[in-house]
Structure formats: C-alpha cells, structure tokens
Length: 373
Ligand SMILES: Cc1cc2nc3c(=O)[nH]c(=O)nc-3n(C[C@H](O)[C@H](O)[C@H](O)COP(=O)(O)OP(=O)(O)OC[C@H]3O[C@@H](n4cnc5c(N)ncnc54)[C@H](O)[C@@H]3O)c2cc1C
Image 1 (cartoon, rainbow, N blue to C red):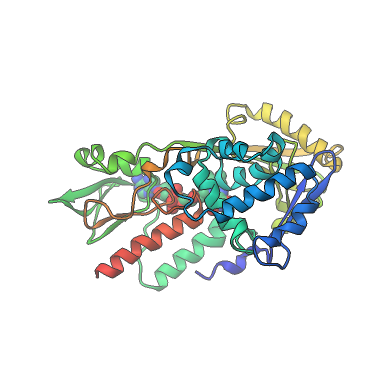
Image 2: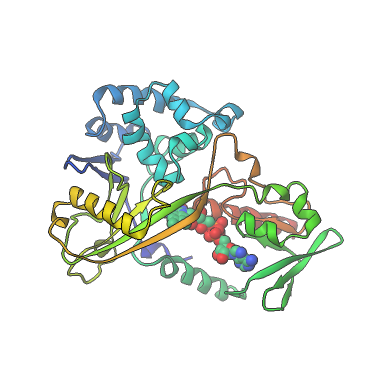
C-alpha cells in the first residue's frame, strides 16, 4: 500500500526490559539462525535466575519441536498449566513468558490456550530470526495506513464509502443481494465480504440465519480490555523510545515525544496496559495516583517533573480472547450463503487478534472471489 516507510521497523528484535529498581537488560536477536538468535541475550537477561533460564530452554525447545500445535489437547489446556507442567516458576511466567504473551495476545498465560501461545512463540521467536522484529507507527494509524490504503483503492477504481452504517444484510433465495444502510439507502452486490466484528455481523443477519449454525457462533466471543494512559510531563523524563517493565504494573511505556519527534520540551508518555482486567474498573483519579507514582518509581527524572495532562483511554472489547477450549467460534471465510464471505481478525485464520490476522482474512476472502470469477 506504499505505507511501510511511515513505520519504524527494527532490523532485528530488540526489547529493552527494565525493572523499577533500575535493573536494565533485554531480549535481542543476534545474527544467528533461529532459535539460537535469542540465546546470547537470554543468557544475559537479568530478570530471571540461572535456574529459571535452564528450565525455560527445554520448554522453548519442546514448543519449537511441536509440529501439531493446534491439536485438541493444546487447545483445551491453558498455557500457564502447560508451563507449570514443564517446570516453569511464578517468576519465569511473570518475567519472561507473560512479558511476551500479555502484549501480543492481550491476556495472561492463565487465560490463553496453549495452542495459541505455541503459535505465538513459534511464529515470533523460535522458527524465524526476524519473526519478532518490532514495527511501530511514528504517526497516527490513519496517517500511516488508513489514508494510503484509501488512496490506493481509489487509484484502482474502487469506490470507498466511509461513515455509512450497515443496518441489515439483505438475503433472497439463499444468497446475498446487498446491504441496507442506516441512512435509508441500499447497496446491491454480486459478492459481499463482511469484515465486521462478530457481534456486529450477528445483529445484521436475518433472524433465521443468525440463530442457525455457523452464524450462531458469531456473537459468542469473549473480549479482553486494553487501557492506555497518556501522560504529559513538563520536562524529559525517559531516555528511551519504548521499553518494557517487569516487577511493576507498567508493562510497556512508549515515549511519544521521541517516537514521533514531537517538539517538547517535555515528554509525552503512553503506558499501554494489556489484559487490563485489574485496571478497567478504576477511575481516572485512581489510575493517575497509582501510575504516576509507579512512573516516578521507575523513572527518576519523573519524580520532580510536573504532570501537565493525564488522559485515560479504555477499550473494553479491545480484542477477542483465545481462551482454553474456546476456538470453536472462529468461522471460516465461506458461509452457507455462496456469495457471502467472512473476513476480520476473529475468523478462522489461526492467528490471534492482530492486524496481521485481519489482513490475512481479507486476502483469504479475496482469493475465493478471484478463483470463482
Ligand atoms: C487498544 C488496541 C491496541 C491494539 N494494538 C494492536 C497492535 O499493536 N498490533 C496489532 O496487530 N493489533 C492490535 N490491536 C488489534 C487490532 O486493532 C485488531 O486485530 C484489528 O483492528 C482487527 O481488524 P478487523 O478489520 O478485523 O476489525 P476492526 O478493526 O474492528 O474493524 C471492523 C470495522 O467494522 C465497522 N463496523 C462495525 N459495525 C458496522 C456496521 N453496522 N456498518 C458498517 N461498519 C461497521 C467498525 O466501525 C470497524 O471499523 C489492538 C486493538 C486495540 C483495541
């Protein structure tokens, strides 16, 4: 889409991992084939004991050797249970396994199926030395992706209608004829690809389809929350673009002033809290008290800095969950209606709730139409 230049992309994975006590280290890829690329930094990683490291290596190798990671047994059990069976301690789960699982899957190991965690570790860390190179936006996502995608679609002759709400999917004689819009209009179509979230799709279907398989599974997803805290300081407080924190509720802290080269003089930080079950019910004042104290503990320069602004953004239904035993509601692209296809991160891509999963689902639906035509 011509958008890649707007994103920062690491040549090789490097995650700085800090503790509020000032112990800094990280995970970084060495120029070695996977999974050896992680070994040098893992051996130096300061947030695990030698004993925990020696126990983590065979567990990682077991995950790498597992060819059939989607099998029923691994779908049914939580990753935490699998980790404990494989000798992992509380500290290893908190300071290594969940350091990766929580931001990537928006749930902790106890709430993730072992199958999805295996997919994550194999794809990101164990089978491809560049699988976890981190990319992030230097501007907003609309600038980075939305506008270039829209431009490219128009150049290719597509009509892009934004801000139109679909009220109903119109079905006649077992096929889709189009959609009815909230503004009273309608669109006719030979093919219809729904890229709606599952609960939204469910609400737009005729009653008889909504209640019958496979569509009856579409409204049954559970979701995990994300809470983002935006904090503006009157002076520079963080010497990094972004960093992870262990032994702290901070999780990941992004320094937007550095990432987006904002004028300053102070730092604008975003604290990104995945699987934010504990933080979700708290008020803005409670979150401010708790987290500005934690930032002051972790970042010495924040102790004397004044906070100019503090904003909380809560997403209650941020991502669908990959709970143990719960994969049955991810539907395939094809539906019983021959010209209605499903896309969206929640469809049966094998991927967790990510932009990459969403893109793969769109490609799968498009491939079906292209083949049929
Ligand atoms: C706070 C947060 C942080 C995230 N961070 C990351 C990340 O770092 N990396 C990553 O890969 N993923 C991340 N995700 C997940 C990622 O955003 C999703 O996986 C992705 O957006 C899913 O894409 P989608 O197209 O399937 O669905 P969506 O992006 O949810 O798109 C569905 C669209 O349908 C529209 N819609 C709903 N009802 C109707 C209707 N009746 N008529 C017309 N339109 C309708 C909605 O407005 C929406 O635009 C994050 C999500 C959140 C909430």
